[in-house]
Length: 339
Ligand code: NDP
Image (cartoon, rainbow, N blue to C red; front, side, top):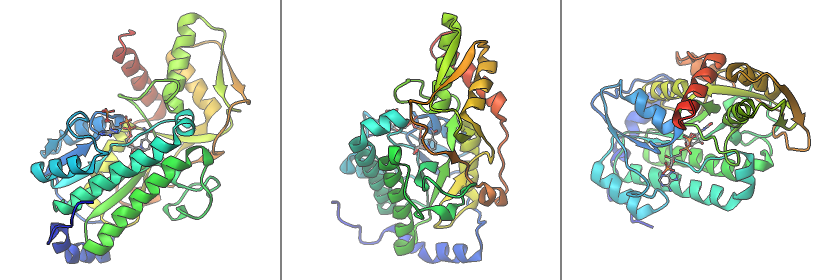
């Protein structure tokens, strides 16, 4: 464990953060001219953040995994001390769908804990002004009341298929709260819903439901299949947000949000997986049948996050689901040279 610095700079800001917190949830933080480190910039969310931040006249800092493995504390602290970011966005994580979570519980818990612990601690040591930690909607109890309010955190058992990941993310939220409480660091947490868009992962073993559907449906169309089977009964309801909308919301939060409580980032609308499969089929141009495969797990029955808190801060999404899926499908074709 690295020794504490004598005077961590964000401790000096404790009073200012406390004052802002008491003044209400909407604050004002200027990104212009700031050095902003996007940890995980090669990922789907990190990539969208880099695109979005390019319009903010700030300096974007990135480093790839070969240079700084975020699971290595000494490397992370050395790099952070050297580049002295003023803002950090923790968009690096080990991410995956149901199969990956189920198969690699050790890596999902261990690597995610290490990355967030190392980055948050290094940010505190080097006096970062603002840090945004990213979790996901899996932090909420499996049977949380819908739409899920931020207050539902830790009120019931988690969905077992991804509890390893969820526990790491809950620890990340608590870590930000602890550094805020003890040292006055302006560290905030946001929980995006299911995201999709450019840079998504289309590997059928490790991908999320929407990219998996896009790929399966495209391949079925190419082979001329008469039907595709979707995982589970098709009845679970899910919410989706385009990653560019998510990046826009996250930049908004950096500017206006400074509270210990995490905040949901979603579209505010959900649909069944079966309806989603039909929408994807329409966009892709697949005319076969869509059947369900109830032998496969469904996961949580419904997951719609309340977006009230974010809307009250003056943000709303711009990209509708059909348009978003059409753009994601074009990006999928372009990325792999399929078009
Ligand atoms: P990706 O898998 O697309 O990107 C993850 C990034 O983390 C990659 O750049 C990866 O680097 C980097 N990374 C992972 N391990 C290490 C390591 N040891 N050292 C350095 N870099 C590392 O994930 P997403 O963009 O989808 O997700 C980012 C965040 O957003 C996560 O916290 C996730 O929980 C959250 N989120 C994502 C959702 C989604 O639907 N995708 C939904 C809700 C939340 P490399 O490129 O080298 O692999």
